[in-house]
Length: 369
Length: 243
Image 1 (cartoon, rainbow over the protein chains, first blue to last red):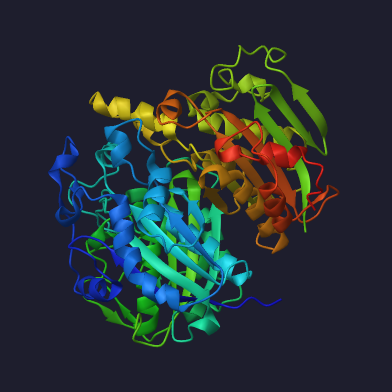
Image 2 (image 1 turned 60 degrees about the vertical axis):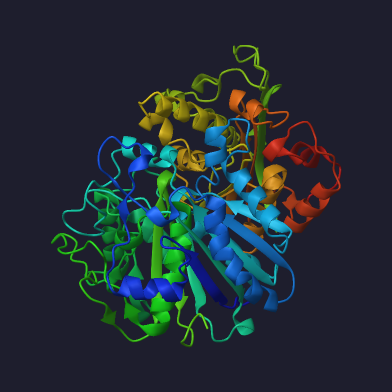
């Protein structure tokens, strides 16, 4: 039985400076704004960029709701069986960190959301797969709609920056002291971000103007527990699965995971070359602007990629100025680049060797309406 | 329809596995292990499960240990024989997740020396990464953390992946690592245990349908194992055909 594409009927994200729907975020990304600012209270011994004063101390639940609540009216316009797919790496940690008898992380996030929003579907599934969590949740949700298990799916990804997470990454020497520079030759680490993101997935015929998920794939490196494979073969495998049956020349741009760490970005570059040959499509990344939002990152990048697919306008990669000759990537930087609307590939990778890749086809602008 | 290739269980009574390579069971005293602690298992050692030295096992957090041990029981039962391991997916489940190692890492953080060795295990899906490395499984991974429905959801999803052609073979593992942190947080009764099933599109084992798993589980009592393993042992022991 042929499987139809899945429409991303709407998408929102909530990051620093208050709720920032994709319509508000995109102009900032296109303007090349860096929204990262120092956040000293996390107790890091050395300077490290984290994000962001406007949401300092906000709970993961708050971030999730800030993205989810505006979507609920549109979600309600679709009918039929429904499921909520949550994604997070750590969930709601702050109460448990303050009191070990409080509900812990992921369970607390699910309970908090259910309590605060009685309109949520009764079927609630939380997917936690490190930094591909929300990309994997999109895949799981899309398949559940495609297979007819549910008529509509809400997907929500959220993670907050706590001292637990920030000091953990710092202990791994993963944080940049100077700012994330995805794919740049001088990159020296990631910047943490915090965000919530949400989208509504339905069969394409139910939202014919919306961008569509037309391919996806996932894989495991089977190589190292906290580092990416050096050769990029794991991510390449996920990309090949996502791109099966798709003409590679139809991919207009790639939204890379682009954390700004030395090994991740090199691994991604090798994977792009392995799949596309010596001249991969233009690459961009948004973590130099909004930071690495962990369990929300994949979904935010799906939403941004849907916008890019629809308008053809690719945001510059904040922090990038000069690439590595070895990888020869065409990284969009400095100013936005206008391409013709078309397919956008978005990739994510995470601890435990997880990789995901999704292919997004354009909707009819403007999106979201 | 997905077919059951191999399955296993690790709990307070010991371990059990069955697959193309035969069945195997042992109690903890038979393995030379100590007495199970208040949370269900004795301290796990690699030699209870592996024939070859596996130094990394000792550095893993308790959740990874019990889940990797379950995967090894599947391997020893011949479950992975003949499969293209690049295509073998993992669908996992846990309710407690990495609560115990979170507590240990937090103690190091509060002491002013956050441990990177502990921090890497503060993601509940790390056991899927360790299994992927040890058994060279490069298929897709998803970890479900849905309270007491986690295990049934993961098993039903694994069957669905096979049935829908999303993956030719899926290792479904439900695992919990319990300890003082779980007890403090009010999870009850917190038990360390794991159950695993290897499902594949081809094979001689019984059929396991996704919808049948979900519908059958709803009619069964919670069973002896709780949290993310709730109803899994009831499901396994039920006389209701799974296919």
